[in-house]
Image (cartoon, rainbow, N blue to C red; front, side, top):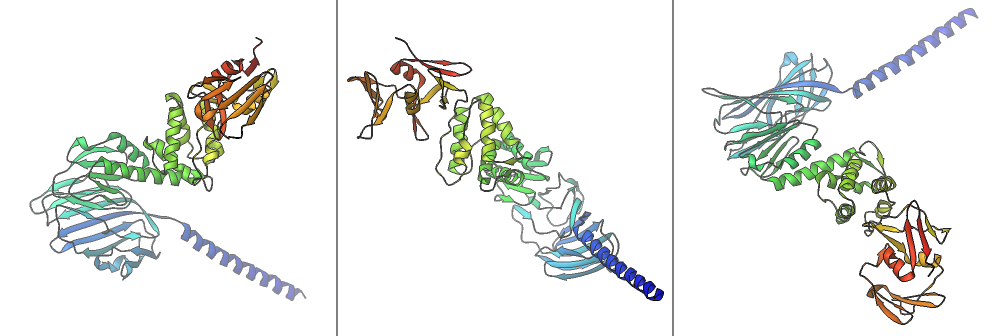
Length: 469
């Protein structure tokens, strides 16, 4: 019996050990799969009559760890050093197994005939499982000694020797695209993440460049030239003028906003409003442009500045139409449901209306009436206010006039014609005495007082009182 118990216990220990071993192996594999490999890259390029000869050397690899490589489409005669590991090439796909932390891959590329400018984009290789932290390019120019090469890694260090031109580029990230131009270019500006080259300082629009710099997360080279068509790659931009740069800036800023701001599902399109404020001009759909313009019309300079700061500062929050209304109301000091009423992109535009949040008291009685505040003037809802004052209101059968009656006074109002009749006497109204907000008729405070003989007192509350005449 004792022998059976010992055997059973031993059996359980073996089974548990096997299970733990399998789990540990699985964990190790998952850990390796999820671990991001960070490498440095040094590239030697030689340009001669035969084309480009390229040698990539990666450091920071893990020995005996298989890696997948993406080759340039035009790469020829790819190879690696046998003493550094094994490699296998199939078209643009390749696999390598380094024997140490360093491994080099070599290949050549046939070059098309050069004109006055040229972009070399698909020339470098990428390791799928790795992120390049730092890159150095040693470029030896044997064929074309005129003109100059540029890179998004940063300004070049150039040596003009007897038989060759030598360029050194270095910076963070992938090697990126290279640009060559025969006509001389100078470095016009260099700021964080941004290098600008061109023929004249006059081409620079500082506001556009600052917006673009804020939108960039990787170092980018911008080249102003008429020698080559507009071109955009990962970190190299070629433009002819500031109009093209403006369109490009809009695209970059839009990408940053859509990636960085978290809008409620179905309301993502409101992000274009943030883009508009970042650019300082309306952009996006016609509805967004109208919303932007109406906000600028009804907010003063201080309010516009505060509103923009609040809006662009929402990058870490979950954004909803209700939240935007609350923030806009706080800036204006008045209530609005502007964003809630406009949150569906395909619905018709609803006007921007600000409502008073103060209590309205009519002849001593509290009401739910909410006047509209427009350019410092109050507009009272026509029907609700007059009914609270004791008037009877009816629509006349013609559909274009309103009958208002109390005791001995009878009024006919013609809103479309800006006139009214009081006890058979005709009177005119100023053009903006009556306003329509979201389908409801409102009357200006001054005309409410003048026609219906009331006093309006605006303090902590809004009091409307019949005058005792």
